[in-house]
Length: 245
Length: 245
DNA sequence: CCAAAAGTGTTCAACTTACACCCATGT
DNA sequence: ACATGGGTGTAAGTTGAACACTTTTGG
Image 1 (cartoon, each protein chain N blue to C red):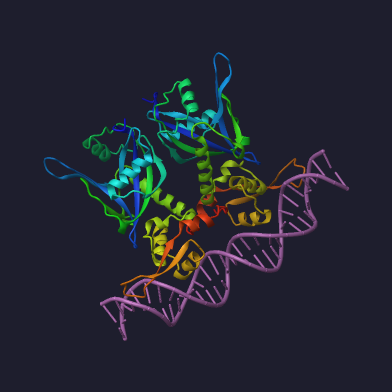
Image 2 (image 1 turned 120 degrees about the horizontal axis):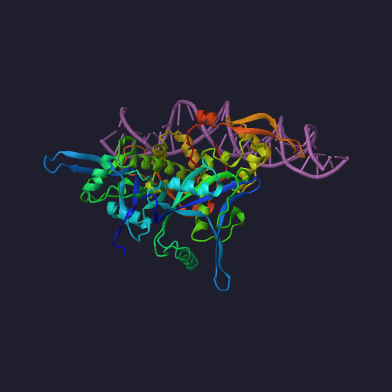
């Protein structure tokens, strides 16, 4: 029963990665060549996705996809949206791709979407048969299927989520500097913060713990390292109250 | 093709309603009697849900469910979660209910969940074969299937959403008083606000427009009515920036 | 000694919080 | 006249925004 892929249910993963400079996302190349002329018929990118097994927990399917890509388990994962328009795969390019990769383009597929957060520098993407890599979110053009919309919504969900829970640390190494933390928030929200005000703000967060350790080998004043204490966070967190808008 | 219900995909609707006093939700009774003794074998409640047609847009399925319940179209609707654990229907009571209502309890069902917002006083619930009604969210006990978790998550999603978008007006009549608006936020967040501070806060929202009209027939000083102007909101809204936590 | 990023304080404006009394209406 | 909820302001504390210079390291 575990062996059969469900024809109607898939999982797509928006893997966000921070490289201390930009917000990136993992994309998989779709390349289809004309077997005679060897010309590219399709060359574009999609998010990482797969159909799920008949009796597979979708979160496990997402973990499986992430493990295939990175070799890692225990990656932060958050379900944020389900894409389900019966016509979401009806673009001719998408239909061609599905046909040529052994699927039935007339079959309805609803895709449950997860985003996950990693530190680009801590993972090595395993390339299999298809080309897979990091692409800066800001530079992404037209993706296959309805994946532009999914990516847009993933980023929005990340922005909302990170305002209510300290999930940014999933995208940083265990020890990080305040400038790295600031840059992370800047690229996620696509804004710039004032360094002094930012530090004033985070200095109130007791779960950010300053280490004695400093950066080494940098050609400028070495920065202090901080760690995030989930334990302190859990003890001191308060509920959401205020409403804006 | 439209005629066949998809065996694996359903939609559940968490219909939130405000009656100027409490936050309520529509529940449907599950009642199963022993055909011989006429004793109740199952009596509990679930959210409103249905399987979708093979080629039906899930949002349309949700609209269909809402229309069945209320006779209304154009109800505010927001997809917030997809419940998909392969064992989510494995409780013996749930399996019995599914069997007795003509479904296969071994078939996996993933449920895409929507919440919708209405003003209790403006709708009349159409009772069909099953008992359907409003129940105060705070008083809800054990629901069927995994619907407690879905309801909990729906409320959390509403709380998050209403902090970033002015969707509360969907739960109020077109003309409302500031006390009604305050009460709405209080029941959604399960807190109390100071009346003067609340009014100071909303007085900054330019899309809340004070009418000359007052309440009539109330045995106290009549309150001013306000309306929500979506037009003004769209023109003056700004993006999310700050991060808390 | 130069380049590069780290680190640090103050002032002003805006917002948040706490708090108490009179008003308009129906009965 | 009384009960009920409507409507209003102020002061103190807190937070947010703008802004510039010195420090430490490697090269």
